[in-house]
Length: 121
Image (cartoon, rainbow, N blue to C red; front, side, top):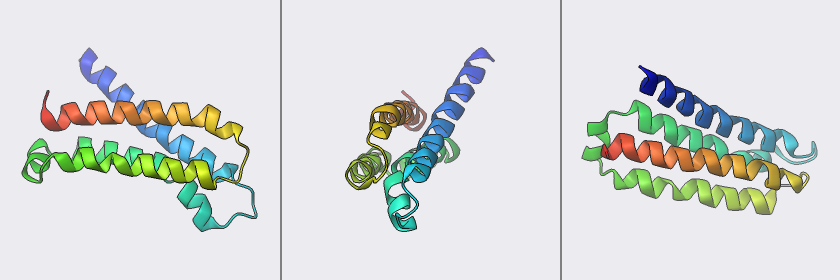
């Protein structure tokens, strides 16, 4: 029971933490920035949450039948989107120093937790 509560709490921490970081990046852009640019610079964090939810909700057998390596390759997309965020974000630069470590912690937890769920190790 305690293990389930801990894993559920960590699941929600990482998912919601990533979503909050994405929202902060979206709202942190100045009002003159286009919505497309705001979405591009904030997409890395919600995509991390989406990968996390996919790892948890899809059955273990579904990942193995489609090759679980797809999950690991999908981890490159948040990294690419984070580079886009660093280059294209028009808001204050201190956002990166405050929010990227939180996003990286959420991403690292998502990779580790998802790997254990999918591979069962």
